[in-house]
Length: 355
Image 1 (tube, rainbow, N blue to C red):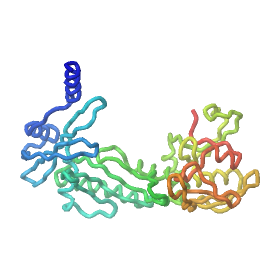
Image 2 (image 1 turned 120 degrees about the horizontal axis):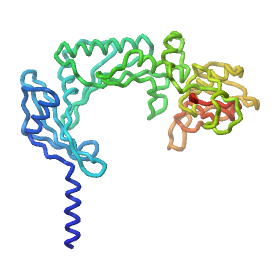
Image 3 (image 1 turned 60 degrees about the vertical axis):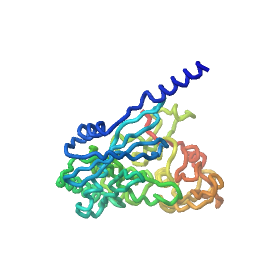
Image 4 (image 1 turned 90 degrees about the vertical axis):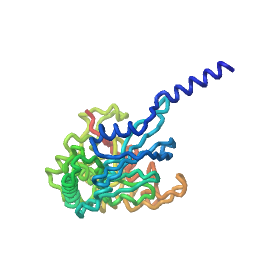
């Protein structure tokens, strides 16, 4: 029994050894050192709430009398690999945005969005959306103007995340799945530029062969593809394993992008078929072609309402072979695997540059 008691004591010590008790003075020190704020008041009342990780956290409220700003310092408890641990964090940046958002000018493409959880902790994000190159540039201009507005109000170093969403034609067609390849999600303190966002847009359009490709200049496309490796190529060698493919036996199409090393979108396959002389009818969104075995395939991004039994009653993509429904590898796959493409066309493709 003594040994058992001793073991329990050791376990308790191990479990608590990595946690630190924080009092009001610790919170004041944190605000002064981490946030460089001098005139403030920390409420002695501490809230406790269960965080998303199921551990109980402590929340301290801080007020800046001069501006009326209120924010929180959270004593965040969590499992640290081997034992319980905790550290201080704050919702200061989000609370500032919530405090000043009514003082900001109205922007056409970007909007500050804030929310509070049950403990009063604030979360915030700058949200925008685009469907074209012009709208994307509008989002970028609004982002610059909004950061200048922060500085004009005395908050030039705010750290906030922004999410500029591409209204992808296929974004929400599959319930429960968001196709967000074209989104730009960074922070206001990052070094990302408008060109970085445009590169993401261009690569997404090329990956799925959207009509917006025609709006990009040759220089813009070249910039987006510089050092990019997810390019589709045709293998003409004799090796069976893709890992053994000889680089000099692969011909890359240059501007046809894959969804990964082994998958190629419906639209990209159309572009491959055009360049390989299959003469598909239709366009990258909806087309038919005849295989070397005289099978007739019909492929469309609109073919997305087949009811899959697994997962249970989930609707997803399909294609037609001689008029019969065929299913891709996954219900939400608007792409083919390179194995499926070889079976359909005889082409041996790869979706990545091999050095």
